[in-house]
Image (cartoon, rainbow, N blue to C red; front, side, top):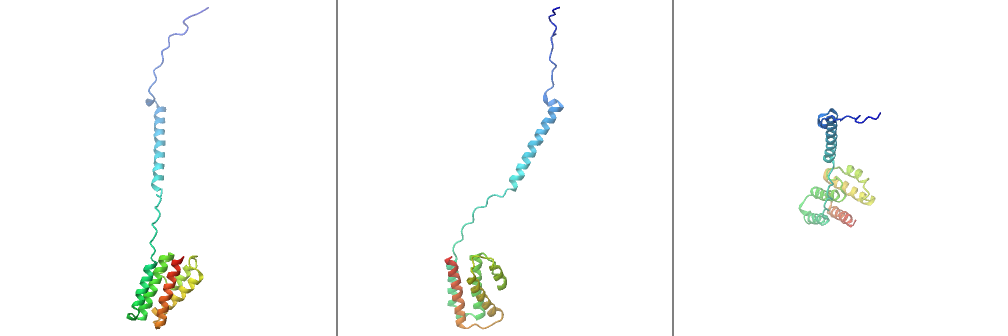
Length: 170
């Protein structure tokens, strides 16, 4: 028996649009959640990222300024007391060492400075020794009120100028 027309006309069952099905809604929400999480992570990374800092501008050489200050101090040596002279001379040298070697010497005691200077390769043993003797002498004049002779005052200026010139030569 041959039968024809066994397949009846089938009409397709109309399907709901994807946004009206539970699976479509879950897929949409999952996709939105994933995009939101990725956007949040990118935002957090971007906001915490440290911007590259521009290279600091090179500082101008201030060696001539320190030598000029020492010369000015030499010129008014007779007008100031030995205590004030040693104080100002020590202050100029301390400022120079702080600027040149990036050491916080201005507000340290001599012992604290010399302990910190041991770690610095830029300051050789000879220079540390000269600075140590220089600062100890200044401390005796400033704090113990030891009198300094005019020759010792001249030696203070010359030693400070020599330290500044030697540091500039490096």
